[in-house]
Image (cartoon, rainbow, N blue to C red; front, side):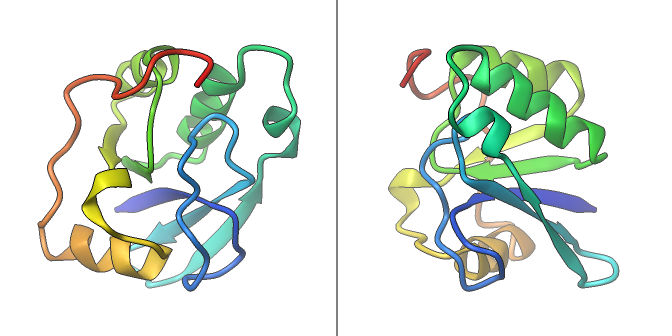
Length: 122
């Protein structure tokens, strides 16, 4: 399974970015191979509008099955859901780094969100 983590870092020790659409980038981790790649999100970080939708389209094109982020707005959530991508919001879970959140995913400690947890333009 491929999982995209919103992050401000470039490796597993990077911090989880609390914003999905305007995250600095995404770390895409493959649980089968244990390999990962980072994907820059600069084009959406500074977007005037549509950052959540465009970021959702970006990670969906990477064929991920799940997104782990601090928060996810309504438009991004709908776009991800339409693409069959589960969303895990971890802002209140106490995870600071990608590796901490990854461990929680692998241990089945997270529940997929049923909707956005913040308003648009957060």
